[in-house]
Amino acid sequence: MQTWRDGRTAALSACDAMREVLASLGLPESAYAAIRPQVTPRGEPLVHLGSIPAAYVEQIAEALRGTRTHRERDSGALPI
Image (cartoon, rainbow, N blue to C red; front, side, top):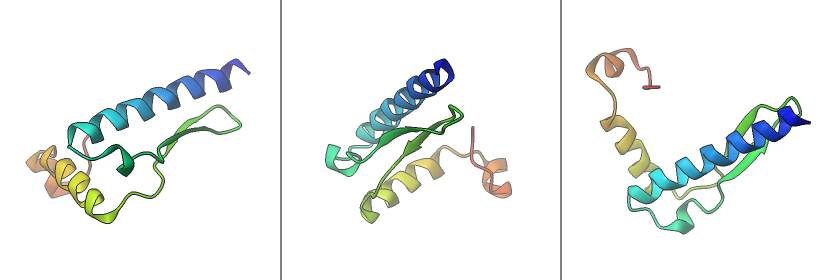
């Protein structure tokens, strides 16, 4: 049970981090209101992003593209 609780805590933290980043992009709260923490039966933390309007996803994608290095752009890998 503790593993599940720890996973839930991690998922909640990740949700908060994602909301903070999306807010910093200037997206309205309604654009990311569907973000929810999830935990697998084995305790793996997950984040369900829900449905996000396409225009906002374009903004998110553009912001992510701006964080990639030249090597990562060439390889297609996202930064960690």
